[in-house]
Image (cartoon, rainbow, N blue to C red; front, top):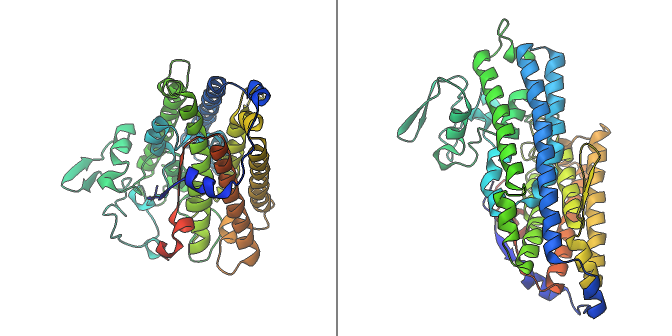
Length: 430
């Protein structure tokens, strides 16, 4: 959610590609039709968002069961359901950046980073008391029934979806995140570790126990968790519908001319690979060595989020997605189109996608083994962990350049999101 720079992929590609392989008439005859590629792309989007709805509804059931009976076992089930819900959604992030409808909506469900003091209590000794950028840094909606936003006072007596939506980016501050996966994550795990400690947050189950309440306001905390979870399901249902047969996202895509539509696909994949994942989510945390600079910092699930982002890039590029029920959505792809019309660039891009997936999988495997959690990987002085992350960054940057090669060879035009951590590291504040 930070401001990012933009660079023009065709300009970079023109310098890096060299002699292009020009496809003859026979190759053009074997290339899939752009219109069919766009339809398959939309079908995959619909399937990914529908799977996101399904897993969010499973989370909703688990949260309701936990709130009805706040035991350690039920809290762990809710946490596991939250992690499972991240899988399908993260795979869908390749539809961002190129599709305006997705970009306008995305902040509702996956805005990050967030100032958790807006929502609930925090350890002020480590979190701090105030922020020059955010007057609501420690507003604590759960503890207060009135919230002052500029000259306006918001009545927070009833915690419901309407209140949460009114607080999203309150005061024009992007880190005032009141809705979505990460608000729910904070409510389940609690504040992330700081001051050199590693691992997920350690919120006590009694924060939701109305009979043995800890840290006060257990009823309001439960109301917030329920409202945020219900709203997540509703927002995801909206996006799944937008990609349906008559949905506005599908219609907007298919209304574009062929090359413009293909450019949408590569804009999203290049931007997620370069500026967002390699830059904002990985390189920045590595530069700052800050455990709070990881995408799923409360749960320490960042390694999985990164991996499923990259898996989604691969799936969208190659036009094949396996749903949670095992069914496969598959069809003409931008990869097949490039292979027919620009085989050299297509081969290079394919190899770089495979390399990026392997590099991010190495991070996931290390964290899953229990040997080194993601927040430890980015710690200062951890040479082995730092190198794992840097290798992932390098592979993602190379992947983005592989997409640039395809863009140039196919004579498309895109703009890819950048990141100060990659483009202007001297501007990154410690």
